[in-house]
Length: 447
Image 1 (cartoon, rainbow, N blue to C red):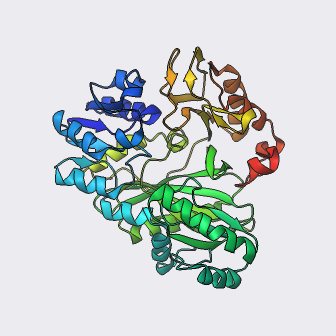
Image 2 (cartoon, rainbow, N blue to C red; image 1 turned 120 degrees about the vertical axis):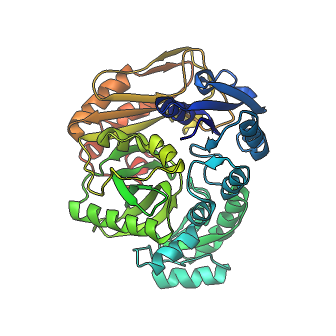
Image 3 (cartoon, rainbow, N blue to C red; image 1 turned 45 degrees about the horizontal axis):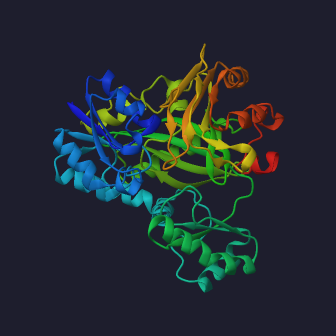
């Protein structure tokens, strides 16, 4: 087992990892930018190292500084969390070259998972359902127009690397495709360093269902849960649930089986998520692999009793999975709300600043993963996520009712947050009835 782990991240996920390490008896090292000198993860870790100024490129994305900190503090492993360097195959290689274990998949798996067009090619070769499209990068607009005509409009352009909606453009006709093609490529280049894009048939009002995979280094691969992630705004998830709702048991079982096949086809190791779109007829299609812990992992934990961060660490340390099976059944229903420092009344504009008051909800079935506290100053340099409010109930209705109470109890003052928006959403009848799809927010709230 590892003796000391460096957490190459910040915010709530850094706090979450530190807590898992403490329960395993592992010392932790927090790295931080000068903007995060008073952050909670810095206060909770056993040791700390400042790695640079506020901009992420000079701190949390600075491989040389992070590696130097790990060597200085004699760490035998690094946990990257999510975001920043979590899906950087070069970082994994450099860690290995310095005899420091990267807690995550090997570089070749990260590289393939991150190249969405290549991953789709591999899935197609292994007879895993994929959305009709280019099955690889598009060379030019002429090829794009030919493919779009073949599969039929609407189509969607996507960046081959990265995510978060960057480089995505929906095209309803050839004219829109011609005008948006170069914009998609340019945005992909500026966001991910490569202008590679591919094209797919656009599925209207789909569900977004994902499968949590746990895989050791000995060929054992298990599905430990499925999640509903359809509540999104501009391709960014806002609310996640476990298990998925209003999708038949037969379809969910098939999705699970194909997800395991997908992981096997690329020799997956450690934790990962296989994501699918499900149309109104319950046809489903592979869309991508995320080779890291997901923001929404707590809804799987709270409905299964498993600690996914501990699994990441144990697998990286060489543990063999002997106590898992693919018949894990979730107990109850869980909903996660991403509480962001954003103003819902001003187009979700970021709202950094000082938190003057902070009261967390509690009681049965309530979990809050966060790094904030009273008088904490939310910096403007990073992701706006402040906390994750995770609700559990014996049924989805009980979870929703608890969520209403918890959102009323949750107080963050001094800055704007998404809490008021969720108070409205939780009362929406289509949400309550589970009539969800990826354009739910746009259609129900016009944002």
